Length: 595
Image (cartoon, rainbow, N blue to C red; front, side):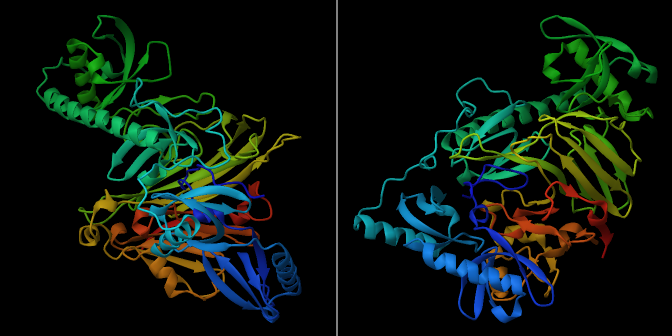
């Protein structure tokens, strides 16, 4: 039985119809072309398949002998096992599942899919599906007054989040700590608060990936936590801005460049003195290392006495005019060495070109790309790349969890570098398994491949994939009108080229569902390449292009609640036949070029 959807991010958020899709199969035509799609139904002459909610009718005589036999087999099974009272449920992206109606409130609908009950937010369903929910509720209970608004409830027949409790919004809170966020369907995510604007929460995961989560996908407790942390964050921003103005007028001691490498005495507001080296400082705080230690400490300015603040400000100003190399922190445990100061603080390997910058994080599992624009009014657009090793935790048979496999150590980790083009990372996972990730960065673009291995007897196998995220870049987009959004997106466009068939063009200003409807009924196989271009990226474009897609899966994902392309999307690439390896001859390539 397929597990219920997971609170999994990486570039996906909460409960999504795409996660509830039926099993997919490989369909091969008489010419040997393959596509991966779900079986919907079959007649004596045709088979209907579904890809991302779009149904396609294929003549049986156009299929290979094996695919034709598969269609006949699935038709026989569906006619004998088809559940009663199934209804189509469509989300705002046009994705559809067939499920049985169980009940509804003013904000959710409860469905039975694949033998398992779950709830969906009405806010994320099409108007047609909302009307269907109300109609079926009236048929079940008879007409009744509009029910009192109720909050989303935990998924039926599931225990309330096993052993993990969400961070209490009324308890002691630390803005810089990892919080436990509980979703509307009772899933947990550990992540650091970044911002809560409009109806969207931005958090930073332990894999150094920024993720946006819609308010409708959060539990009431998580919403309260987000509001509380936002209030703290707003106060902190005001204090940081005020102190930055104060520091400009601060009288500071005269220092030489040699003082940047000396051990200094710093005193805190309680009068305690420590011996430490200055590493870096900016408006938000100060980074130091205790004398004789290598691991950095990041402290806010208000932790220091006025005399120490003046000394730290003097060191900060001197560092801005110094030609010294950025300070570095050595590898330790599950982190590789990284720059402790400078514009690429927290990163291990950096490549800078006229067109883009790219940096490998200290986690060794994520990279960030800054695509520059020739238009000074357009800020660089960022993209993320994640090297993902994950498994399915089946401890609770009623609630499987999709989890990342933690890295505990690296073998001969590379030192921080500003010009290293080739990087090989290898090491061990917490379950005793191993990995090897290979990365090539140069002025033309990026190349990724790798593999994971499990120890003998591993009950929950590790899977390896590469995820490329294209984040949303319109601030508070859910509360803006299209005329306010257009100056940000212009003619921004996503172009997807399948292995067979015509390419599809998705204008950023057009809803996913609207564009999908234009191609309804057209054959669209698995992806061969994807390109983003247009106004947001200046005279540049980014193409994601697997070297060889034979036996591989390359697909686009849209997080639930994202209606327009400018709100963000992602791509996932993995071996269809071998989930543990992406070989070099099938590496994922990202090209960043001019138009």
